[in-house]
Amino acid sequence: MIRSWRSFLFVGALMVCLRSTVHAFTHPTTIEVIPVPRSIALPNGPGEGYQSALRIGDVLYLSPLRGTLLTTDVLVSGGSAAEAAQALANVQTIVQHAGCGLEDIIFIETHITNLTFLPQTQLALGTLFANAGAPRRYAGRVEVLPRLAGGALVEFAVQAKGCRWTTANGINRRERLVHEVISIPTSVAVVAANQPQLAVRINERLKLRSLRGLDLLTSVLVPGGIVAESAKVIANVQAILNQSGCGLSDVILYNVRVTNSSFLPIVLSAIRSAFTAERAAVKGVADYRTVSVLANGASVELVFEAANCDFDSSNRGSTRISFLIVWFSMPFLNSRSFTAFQRCGSRAVHSEKFPLLEYLWSSSSSCLLTSEVYSS
Image (cartoon, rainbow, N blue to C red; front, side, top):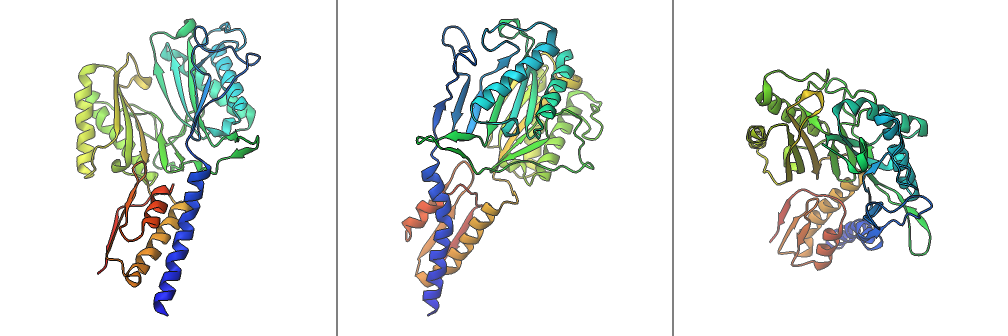
């Protein structure tokens, strides 16, 4: 009787996990060019050039858009403010054509040729979202480049998620995705008007905006040069990660920008020290680059992404509950051993006794910390 009851719980656990498996079958990762007719925009670049928009899985990537008229590729007059407004109008046009809205944007990278253009671009961004009545749920960064294509002063590279894609039978559907701004208490950090959010969650991934060695409450650069800035920017990253339910061990990508190549060893040493202090392995993909100038007169800037954080998600909770039920059922199913390991981005499960369970868990879109259960 007891064994039958335990077996029933085991089957129930499999049914809960099956939800993620069905999602994996019905929502396969695809790469799709979003066709943009010439009536909306000319092809980018020389000749046919590169694509205006590309969907990979459930993420929409836009090629950098400048302040040109989309149907003529002629740069508008009026300087950086006019170009920023036109470039963002272009972003809105392409995003909407792809079935998204401004509320679906998750990351905006701003490219400018002079740091003095930054206030105009930030004002243009604030105006765009305010006029559309769309929430600002994106992180972002700014990069000053020596030149842009076509003599432009401003351009925007955008990513969006959670859009309405058209299936093969012509039916629009919206992915069931978590896309939310991480609430950071004002006692920890203050976000100025028209600024990107400090942290945005998309499913099990966390995107942080670019961070520098500033006081998070006053936006004042710390004194002391590159050593002090390196320590402060790492502390800022850790503060935002901790508020988001993450740690340095969850970091999967980090970009480092310095204004002098000699600063790079100092910054990397500070990063390694922080990881060591937190007993976290450095496992993220890194990108190092020297730039001419950074906002606020900073010498270093970091952009981090994390995954497998301790988000308060019902999906994660159901997976954990399922795992506990399976663990509870194992002794009554005469399993010799069961080892499960799963983490975001690298999922694997091994089960000699239950290959179906192995498949279900490896297909799950949820995240589970390392767990080991043994029974004789």
